[in-house]
Image 1 (spheres, rainbow, N blue to C red):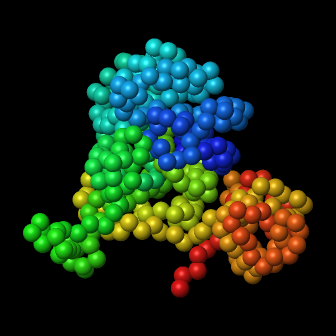
Image 2: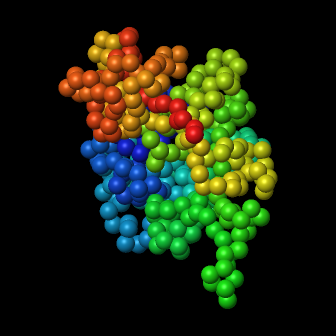
Length: 400
């Protein structure tokens, strides 16, 4: 079973693969549905594909926007460039885009979740029309997914197992276009489903009626984050080809930590060992909304999606990444502040190599002692032992 991870930029691509992903999905500067991610120039994509292939891993490129006539002009040249670079597949939702990919390249085609595939008949249709893999809509139960795998065994089936959910049918939503003139179907969603709403009677424009009894407004369109970690044993035996983590807009720390948790669990399942449920605690240490199983066990209007706040759960803060190691010193590229005497955690692809320590010796890039770090600077942290490469640094957030 493939573990597929998001790659919002080249750094995230590398961390996703190093921390255990078998493949990543990413986008160029056009035609993907995460327009606000950094995304890739063609030169960066070329570097990322070479990096992945050297590790024996894969890169898929999203072309899953729904395109209007005037947006089709540059697409043939782009797909030919993707083929030249050697990407392993393209992720597409628009039949017109599929026809262009087939006309100008031999690239394998994966059908995006945006296509809302919810039945085995639809899966069979797409396979008969040249699609290699179907990324199912997120609005399916496990029993429905299992039936699809049984009835269309020739199809590769991919499902989401972790990350943000959408209140609309697998992202086919016009709220952002209506309220903010930025269409989710062109990759520019402003997530108005996360906003706070009140009820207003039209003849009383200044009187706001709370829909919730507590008077704090309501988040009637907001949804929980998906987390199927505890369902992995069931998924593992189902015939599903690939499990996918959402999060191209998330940090390298988020991607790396979630990936390594699922990687370790899949390794245990491959070895016919018990799923290590204690490792799921690590999923609480990334920024997330309250977790839920989505539609996996069926639809429950009280529990499946509704989440009465737009706030994230944040118990840990991402501080930076280790860009070099020198004997017993870690050189850290800092994104957030930490200070002498604070406890920090250094995490690595193998959780058994993680380090928890108090900061006792901290120097700037010039070697001079400092008491605290500043964002966008490099610092030298005395760890006391040689470290693996590609470490990330975090700390537990103090609650007042």
